[in-house]
Amino acid sequence: MTEGPFDVAVVGAGAAGLLAAAFAAGDGRKVVLLERTRDGGRKILISGGGRCNILPSEVEPEWFVTDSSPHSLRNILRTWPLPEQRRFFETELGIPLALEAESGKLFPASNRARDVRDRLVDHALVRGAVIRYGALLEGLHPADDGWALSLAGGGVLHATTVVIATGGLSVPATGSDGSGMQLVKGLGHAMHPTYPALTPLTTTVQHWTALSGVSLDALLTAPPETPRYSRRQGLLFTHRGFSGPAILNISHLWTRPRGGARPPILAQWGALGRGDWERELGGGRAQVATVVRRHLPERLALALLEEAGVPADRGLAQLRREEREALLVALTALPLPVTGDEGYKKAEVTGGGVALSEIDPVTMESRRAPGLFLCGEVLDAFGPIGGFNFLWAWATGRAAGLGAARRVTP
Ligand SMILES: Cc1cc2nc3c(=O)[nH]c(=O)nc-3n(C[C@H](O)[C@H](O)[C@H](O)COP(=O)(O)OP(=O)(O)OC[C@H]3O[C@@H](n4cnc5c(N)ncnc54)[C@H](O)[C@@H]3O)c2cc1C
Image 1 (spheres, rainbow, N blue to C red):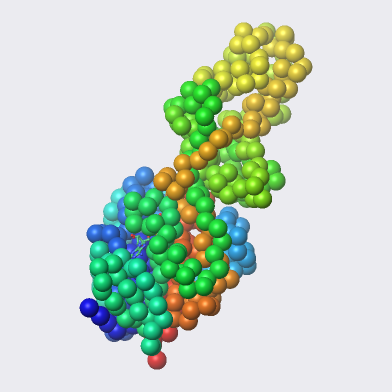
Image 2: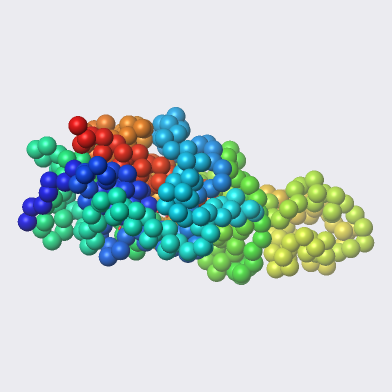
């Protein structure tokens, strides 16, 4: 069966596609939103631990990671500045936002991700978009006056413009399995290699997995590649390795080796830096273990002493010079014994994707395939934990929707 023609077909009802459909619709334009799952927006539902960290409270373009030009990335982010995004959600969608002061994250005041997903779906429908669930795009071909979209099961749909918002490869159970990326690649777009990002790291070293359940703040660095946003954040020991925001935010340096090399990820545990520890371990009658335990969780303190080869009953006064140095390293620059990662199964985002040079940074229109627009995680950029990835999805989704609408409006 052949359907259409539609003015705009948006593929993927995730964060980017829902915005694209809403902004493309209006003024009588025929907009269809195709979504392979039964409901769409599944990543929104599981985001922020079910609370949806909808936006950050501040943003610097340098905090995003891309293999494309940082200049293009900056131009894209400029299309919809953070204060305007915030206003859209609060005023236009009527979702009051609340700031979590210690993290700088914005959540819906209701703390319910479902409210965000449902409100976005309503908004797209009210604007006049039609949503087709259970519609899996399998083929995309230029046709007379636009595009032919082949759906699983045999249907073909015609549209003047197409917005691809099919996401990346992370958490495939939410519907994003990279099929959209493959279609875009098949049309000749340059891609940067993809890799899981914001994903937990694993270790096979039992000494470390035995710390499962311990959590604390840690500052992770990976000279010379330490991400610009790196700061002291939560780290959680799991039965498989390491998780928490500090780990997720640096995980791409492990999952995306450059030239086959991975920088060591160095941990400074807790709040004290090297100078503080030098003072703490300077002398006195206490045992070394007592001093370390004062500042760090007990189990970690003992593991670090073992790592440094310092007997647990060693007194500060008896600490040998090389033991002291080894302990200072273990406390402030310990190379994490990472041996693997949790991959796309647990990755919050996909790194790499369609090169930003392939699209117009204002309209998101492909430079290779006129009438085709790209947005969201399908593109080569991601940000740290903290609402930055939705910010990217909202900004690029809106720009692509407006771009597609402009293309069909005489
Ligand atoms: C556990 C978890 C928690 C997260 N928490 C946060 C958070 O709190 N804050 C934040 O900013 N970011 C968070 N993120 C990241 C954020 O969810 C993503 O960056 C964002 O959802 C990407 O939006 P998208 O629309 O590009 O892709 P997606 O949300 O992946 O949407 C793609 C849609 O396209 C559909 N689709 C795919 N292929 C096809 C096809 N061939 N045909 C038809 N439909 C198709 C999929 O079913 C899906 O609905 C989290 C991610 C995860 C996994």
